[in-house]
Image (tube, rainbow, N blue to C red; front, side, top):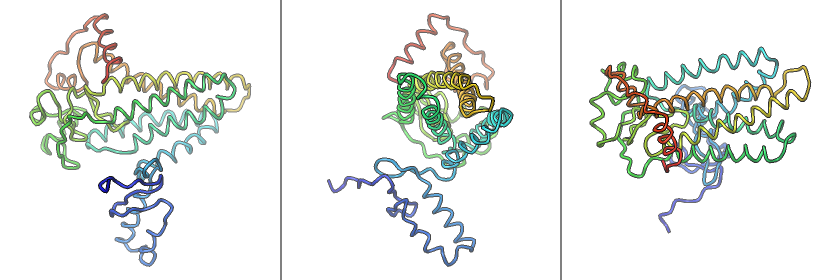
Amino acid sequence: MADEPPLFCCCQFVDRHGRTAHLLDLSFCDPYSASCCEGAALQEFCADLDDRLRLPQYNGAIYLGLEGALPVALLPALGLFACRGPLHTAVVLLLLPPLFAHLHRRALRDRRRSRFFVSWCGASLVYCHGAFTLLVGEHYAFGWWLATSLGHLAAALCAAATRELPATKRAHKVERGLAPCGIADREACAADGGGLAQSDASEADEGEVLCPMCGHSIAGYDHHCIWLDACIGAHNRGLFLRGLLLVLATMLVQTALAVDRALHRGEGAWCLELVCASYGVVLCLAVMALLAEQAWLLSRGLTAYEARSMRRRGKELPPWVGCASWMGRCRGLLCGSG
């Protein structure tokens, strides 16, 4: 019993210095009060402040940092800006996709894991469901709110299960900032969109691929999802697809009800319901694009990694397997344990 870890309250955590701290305890500022303007002291203070940007939860606060906390503050600010009119909403929704496409490509190129994408994904669903509850839910049957709440909860559980590594995983120690293919081949690996060089596949166990983002050896490796910060492979591809389908179905229902509520209000002013509906449409389109890609890969019996590797080597992709075989693969993947 003495070896069991201590049970923390929701606001306790172990800081970067190895000390047990509390989110509401501001005594960490005392050592910097006299020399806060000095370069080294200011850098240490910023590091300690970043370490305290955490989300309270059961048995201790989890680390978010500046990257993880930014979406929590940025999403409401963008929502308030979009509420000023349809033109403001169009500006926000037209700027976000290319911005995220650039950040996504840069993260894959630099092999850099970031809490920003995970936090944005979670904050988007929480804020959308919160707005739906406050603005739309009370005007419709309770069953609609309950169904969408259960849909979001089930999607969150799928996401949590997707992030868990298989019990037999083998971690490879990869230097931070160094691609597994080596510095000399870094540009070639970046062009692969997250794949591995042929020489590095031999480092993993037979039938497994070394993930270039987190360094784990994954059987049936498909890709590393930066929105969940998780490797997608044979052990969780079905969970990943089930979560996407749940998010899509839930967001479609909430978006349709938000549009219906905005039309029934009959007000000429641009309202928050239409802002949430517009953002919901963008989320649904993004999820549908991911599902369409996975459906295309399943129709040829490939993973995303295998398709990239075949294209890189100039090999022809397998033909369409037929509707019956494709539906059987989809059913087996969605109804399986992985």
